[in-house]
Image (cartoon, rainbow, N blue to C red; front, side, top):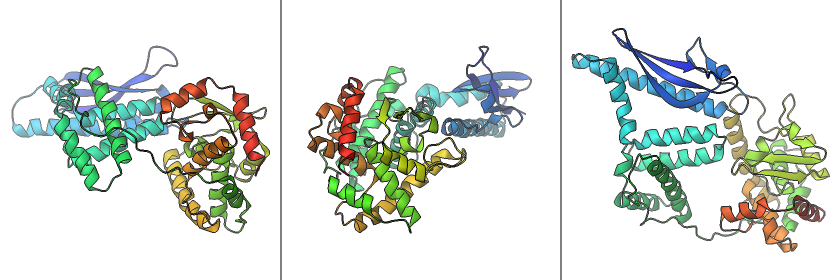
Length: 398
């Protein structure tokens, strides 16, 4: 009887990642299938023959690898079961060939899974989530049926766009999915998995101008002055919103992953998870007040958003959902016409900075540029002290 085992081959170089592979044994013949997954020795549970969910910032990637390898192992067992049921003689090579056939032919689902896992491995968590969301949307359109990358053509993408529009999605959301799928498709073309057929030429991939989600300084001041001491969950949401505003519109995902060691000598430094850009912010008293009030006890996190090492992604998502929900209540309490979200703080800092005659080059993309690439070029050449002076100027008006 044929058997399948998930195995790990450590690297011969110290400190380097090893390889996860599948071992198929049939009639004393052994074959191996190498996976694209690379993990460290301590991230492998030899007794259970599976990926260990170690902490240290790679939990999401490791969980994905464990799920994908378990799914592959189950698929291999299904292939073996079908071959045995057929009653014909087969070899270990037959099992391997049937397993690899979809990958050789360019399976959309398998390619997207590997692409998402790769992005997670590189620490691009937000990007991996958007790619996963686009793939899930496209597969809902497909009714769960996989297809070959070479089967993606212009007619299919027009049908997909019509499907999205019929479900009431705005054109910017439609464009969001189309642009992600186009980027993934182009990656597949680069790898030789598909022929370039320009399937996105007749669908919308632009960006419509949207209503600015910003509130004036007076509204920020009203939010700050609300007495929420008797309502801890509202106070936490309000303080997270203000902390984002104080730190030049820092995104919630970056706030969640701040470490105490990121604050040194009066400077808060962090790397944006969306772009990988390193940013430095002068630490102000208003920031300290919030960090002190919402310190993560017994943890190296700066803020009590992710409180334990386990299920960090789930904790982040739950916290973001809670904060955004509570911000709606705070909007009403402050008499605002705009529904607050964490993203409003980013737009608001930009809008207020611009009203204070801060040069446009100091403001990031959610802060006035149409192109994120242009924004990154601007930010890469900035004198950080100019940004700090701009931030101090804004905070003094509160």
